[in-house]
Image 1 (cartoon, rainbow, N blue to C red):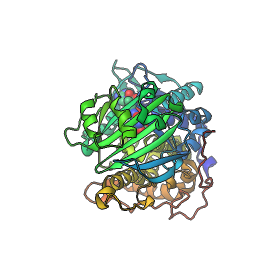
Image 2 (image 1 turned 120 degrees about the vertical axis):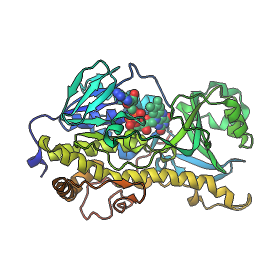
Image 3 (image 1 turned 90 degrees about the horizontal axis):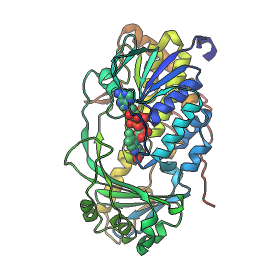
Image 4 (image 1 turned 135 degrees about the horizontal axis):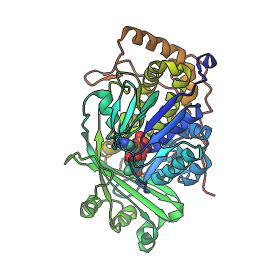
Length: 461
Ligand SMILES: Cc1cc2nc3c(=O)[nH]c(=O)nc-3n(C[C@H](O)[C@H](O)[C@H](O)COP(=O)(O)OP(=O)(O)OC[C@H]3O[C@@H](n4cnc5c(N)ncnc54)[C@H](O)[C@@H]3O)c2cc1C
């Protein structure tokens, strides 16, 4: 089936944005044999952000595109993480790190590895090239200097403040407050060596989470204590400025940790500075594809995740794989079929991955309200339930479900009646597809070639 639909002519793809999502898209398109070029508005990337998780679901795809061992080296080497009580650090549950976020490393280091691989593949990245407009029919992008560049399909991987999303939706999709914000700090572990209370946290790689009423703290120690990161999520409805760079008020942070277990509070208190991220929220979009069907969104531009989902970059990678396979199967003359199948194949899984993040945040923030200090908590009630996400093979699933989904889409395209993915009043337009423990859609009877469920764990020797 695939061979019959593949074309010899090379499809030309423009990717807007060279974040992790844009790089994954570039690699997936290159792997599929397409001509791909990336436009990025930033002139030079710095080591930005802090901890970011990459799950086995993403690594499986990235490995096929030539990126694996370099990513594993970046990730945290701890086998387990501990979920603890806010006030005293009592361990409430122990869980393999692989069940939570997969490999947690510095976002900037992962980004660097992604960019390097894109360059090794000979994919041009035009840095310092801001896209200011799209022509969805040609389709083309228009750069700040007025130049216009055409392609067969354009991928808007331009992040949470996406311009491509405005084109697709036809309006500015303003962020809403999620009711929470994060204070985040990532720094060299050296100053912590003179803080006696936190010594157990800086000897080797480890991850701990302290949960309290309406707040939690994630701590990540990397490179055997050389680097240290804490992220405090807390109630905040003050404003909804969406920024990765807003400085945080350390006095407010110190007030927040006044009743926190001293092991970690002592490390927070000596931290010099932090960032204040308002966690913004958007309803799921009714579509990820422009009316011409030739511009498709990918990554944070259409499916940003809460930090507690630990899947933002991994789901962007899956989306890249699915879109590449769809374009390959549909062929150069059938881009609308490809992009519309892509959004339909992706929506349910992405939505459930986003909801996972809300579920765990709400369980962590509420459980201690329901019990007395001396009452035992069932560890299952505080565990992160991400494991089902990891065995999934996005490419195999796309091949397996292509016939079924492309039939639906062909009918929709013929009638001109494209069903929206989501209606803010009623929710998902179809019932969400459920996935089994192997990451397979439960409704699908097909035999999808998916690896066994247990993800690989790298243990510190
Ligand atoms: C600075 C920063 C720090 C982050 N830190 C963390 C973190 O610590 N932990 C975590 O889990 N997640 C973090 N994230 C989010 C995480 O990187 C994403 O969820 C995930 O990688 C998917 O990203 P993306 O490529 O879809 O979007 P992004 O990473 O936002 O990338 C979008 C890219 O598009 C570019 N762009 C935007 N508009 C245009 C335009 N008009 N023309 C050309 N280029 C454009 C941007 O400059 C950017 O490079 C961070 C994101 C950013 C931008």
